[in-house]
Image (cartoon, rainbow, N blue to C red; front, side, top):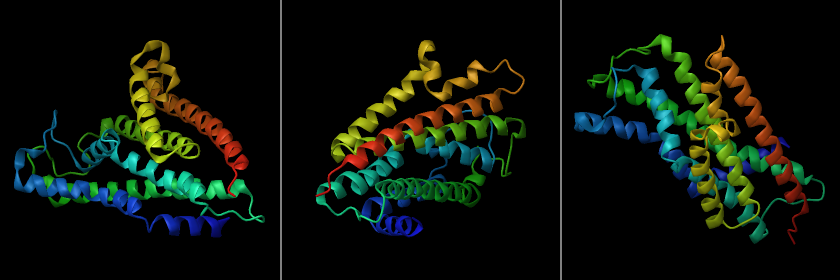
Length: 252
């Protein structure tokens, strides 16, 4: 299994779409260059911020622009649908199909988290290299310690949401073409962003739990645990149906 995952990651990381995803991680550094050239290029409401707040803001931005998620879904489509269609997918009698699928899952999600890790490092570097001289910067690591939990909660929810969007992308990638996979994932992303605005659908997606549990003694912890549970249910159900689909696929 380890060897299969290693082979899959090695194959994916050489592709152009994967390199494009990883290249996006330097965006915060590009922003720092723009800040040096043009001081008013970065506009943000509120008080001056530290490196932690700046990085948290960057994490939210990368989710909002959707491009990293889109590239990750493209990676999934090439790894699944296109390999099945071209009959280049790993398929041996002595390797269970569930192991092949797991290797695909690990490789796709690994690329996103590798991007995210690089993106966070670049965000901190961007802050200390250039943004700390901006009028919106305090030059400290954390400017608002009392709001750290709130910001961490938001960042975790953004990342958890990203894993669900990618998983939905994998679901489409197992069943349809790259174009339809991107379209379907985009529609789901738009739907998921709208759902929390409706009271009768607020609990369908975990992002709504924070407001529901705000009256309790530990709103963030309760909300986070419940949201993790709901995300786990989503992932388990989606994986179950994806595994059944993959096991029934004909590669010959």
